Picture 1: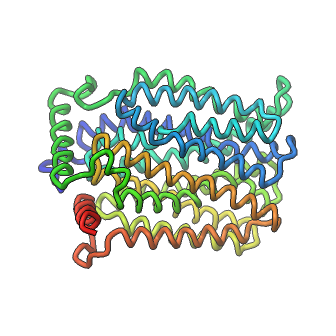
Picture 2 (picture 1 turned 60 degrees about the horizontal axis):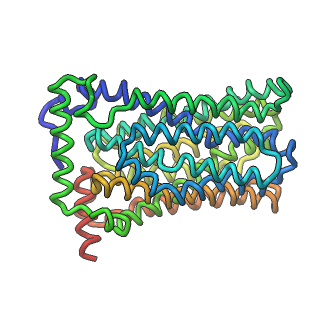
Picture 3 (picture 1 turned 180 degrees about the vertical axis):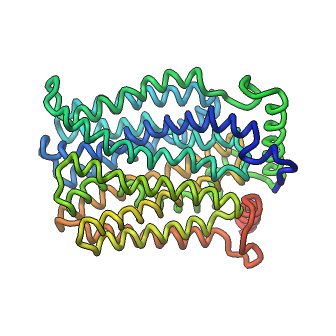
Length: 450
């Protein structure tokens, strides 16, 4: 791996500080809006299910069907982004998903619920992998896990913001003839449309076009990123066609699937689990549901930074997954509200901390159009876990009336995640702290010769 030759390549360099302030901070805001519009159904369902007479199975199917639309359109969307540019395509994605999210307030029947959730997935398809691809054009590899962690902290922050915001919106129940759950969709959906329009003016495609960097900073950053792309090419990176067939891409897709099962299970069902164990009212449940996200936001930043410092990925993913498994197991077995909330917080800390480190892996052996396709495929296949997890919990709860069996199953999925992460690299010579480039080279050689 190419090592920085001076402090200008550290994350705290002038160029990186400017990139962080302008791009990562803005992308963070976009992802808060995206994730909030994706999972606000978890808060709305506290009132929506009874208002529309939806069963747990109906809710689980509707919340998860989002990912079927997401799955079908993820790769095409990211290839379009790579062709026409992130600025225009991310703006289009945000405007369309904001409008669909706000339209959820019009739902009256299960079929309308399913159709709009599916369309929300279609509209948002390509956003997350597009951002990961976009960041690979701005952030050197040795700082990428920290950058992705800062961006992905938005997932936890959306939970922190979503709880109190939903609690406040529930209090608007009946205002202007709208129920509280309808206000949640309208108020949280329309800002995405405004942000989408703003994106056209704020995002810059690549460092060479960044007038907010000095000439020297643009030249240095471009040189570093070109050198990394050349190194990947020298190792024989897969072509666009071969990227979608590459064994490592499929291994990472499976790993992504096992991470998304618990991620979206907790995102869509956390308020209901808290309500079930605490017996609190909707407003109190929405506020309490923010606490696990506070814990997750803190730990995912720390784990991402530590992973970059140690230049190690797989053990960080595996360790975080096992922490998450312990949290889910404990939440299934304890029977007091306080201990249950602590266990759910531990589960969230583990799951949320593993994901940014995982997303630092694909761009270590893919670049250009191959990266766009490979990242999209990994996220697309992985997103099916977002369908399986919530649907499974809803179906099990409909049959059993509780969460114990499904939470223990999710804990077992996270143990599988840890095993998959460790198995990414088996060579004894590669044990211990290693760079991403060493990981990529070892994986590429092994998969090409197998």
